[in-house]
Length: 172
Image 1: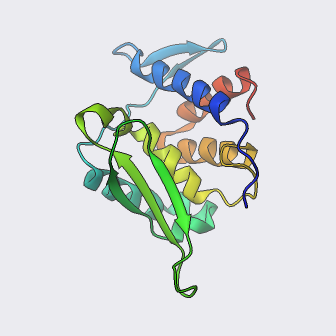
Image 2 (image 1 turned 180 degrees about the vertical axis):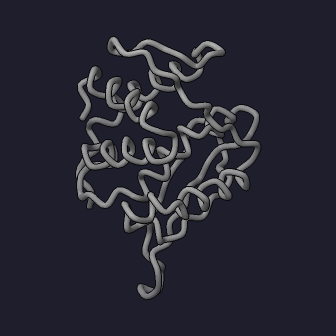
Image 3 (image 1 turned 60 degrees about the horizontal axis):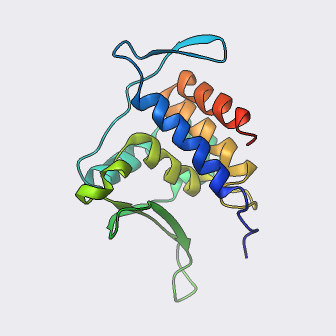
């Protein structure tokens, strides 16, 4: 049984700040954060759960991701989730008890759930897959995994944004 995820709400609030920073960046993508001027990378948006699945496979195949995270070798399926409120990652052993662990990302893609069809949300779910810590779902191990993954995929500027916003929010 996993430890209780007591920091989840606090983490999600901080992550919403990161999303707003990306959403409200000027056309130059240049923002001031913690006394540092940085240029935010463009963030991919997806049209469907199938497009998210293709993206997840490409991320897990990146040499830098494979070199850093052992679980990158394990496939993740992506499916459309009913509802609009949450994306979700689940890792489960097969019912028979033998065979590979099954990992799945469920992502809303209805018109009301389009908020989830963005690169930062997908990387959050991929970080759940790659995090091999024994801590809570949004604990320190996950946070470090997410920051490192964002840095490997989107670049050091995006990782810097996460580090600063999460630290300022008391997470880390």
